[in-house]
Image (cartoon, rainbow, N blue to C red; front, side, top):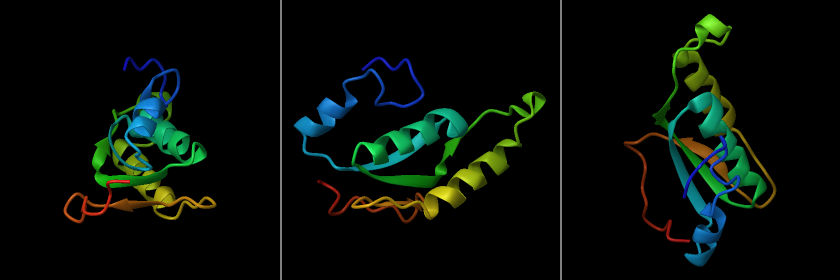
Amino acid sequence: MNKAYADAFEDTDLESVLAERGIGRLVIAGAQTDECIRSTLHGAIVRGYDALLVSDAHTTEDLREYGAPSPDLVIAHTNLYWEYHTAPGRTAGTVTTADLDFTGMAS
């Protein structure tokens, strides 16, 4: 999968790969919190996936020189709003790495 856009679903085969495997719940971690992570979280939810953000496993670069908040604030804000995000028939939320449990997440 070659990714050209912030949302990992855009113009990639990710959705077809997930469908082939019957995957409906995603655990999201990585970089860049304020671009790729947020875009992929929202992309997952609007496509009907459950999307869980690992609150201590995403990061971003320091873009304060361009007017952005400091990385710790970007991360904290993303964790805050995704913890309480809702959508009909789908789940969102956050979990720490220590509390992450893949048991029962096969579908």
